[in-house]
Image 1 (cartoon, rainbow, N blue to C red):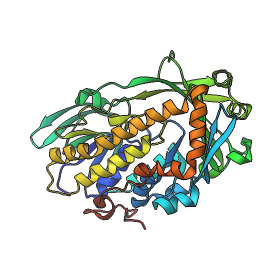
Image 2 (tube, rainbow, N blue to C red; image 1 turned 120 degrees about the vertical axis):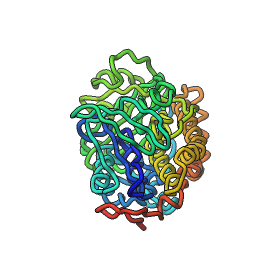
Image 3 (cartoon, one colour; image 1 turned 90 degrees about the horizontal axis):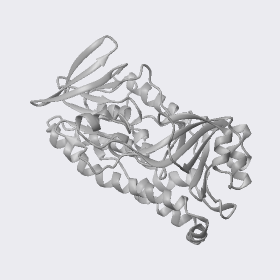
Image 4 (cartoon, rainbow, N blue to C red; image 1 turned 90 degrees about the vertical axis):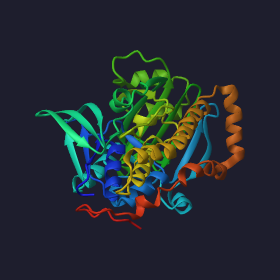
Length: 414
């Protein structure tokens, strides 16, 4: 496809760069437009369940990820009502044996660095920093894209425009006429601390604390050198902007009634970052002709299923599979991508909402939740993840190498 028009991807985040690499594997050239002057990922940790790890490993990123990732030994579930642990589920080697891919936790910046390094050495991928999409117009068999670059306006003729530009996607709202993101009524406080400050029983596990109107998630990062804390509370949003600094006192006041063991963890960071958790109703047209959206631009979800990043990675793999045929009709291929991905994404969005309701139950109902979890046990909890974690990318994503490999060789691993 060397002579074909490139595909333009708006956004050089996790979804956009995964799409560029997967499309390169399919033989497609891409130009990735990123409005920031440098590649950087906001936020802190991300959980990569086997469905996501499987794709990243197939793109030969496993070794780069494992230099920084941790594969936790356990998922430990705690209840504020019970004052302690109600269930633990084995992770680690058992998960890899069950699903054929690991469950990793990693800092978002480390994941983005692995993706960017691979993309920057791939001759099918061009990344343009400091470049902002302004508008896009359909033309016969192509799309004409106007962008603002560091040197002035530019026009790019492309086979398609893929919006991977996040929860506040310009492609979704300005090009496809899709919905705006909405505040969910939930706020997340995020912080990272040195692992040495953390009690030994938490250092090799992913932890979940469920409480009335809030919950806490924590896990190790940076190869076990740091520890990620995410505390979520139901609240109004009254700050300017969607991400602002927060103090330790603000966090401790928000979780004043929680058990001392949880509050001891929350007291460790001096400084926190406060995020408004927003979502996008996925029930709109993701595709219009030669334009499509993926990841948060299509289905930004609450982080209560730990699947936001994984769904973007899955989207990228399926998109590439539908565009792997050099003779494919672009509009039909994009429509097929939407038809395949939307039902699954909607189901995961709903799962995240349901999990949020379960995590935040008041004490009267939390007693029944805790008892039910104890009775069900770890095996049933693991089985509930099967429909998500057993998902595999289309065969084309794994086996088709296209016409040009990167300098790093993006060959099938394993």
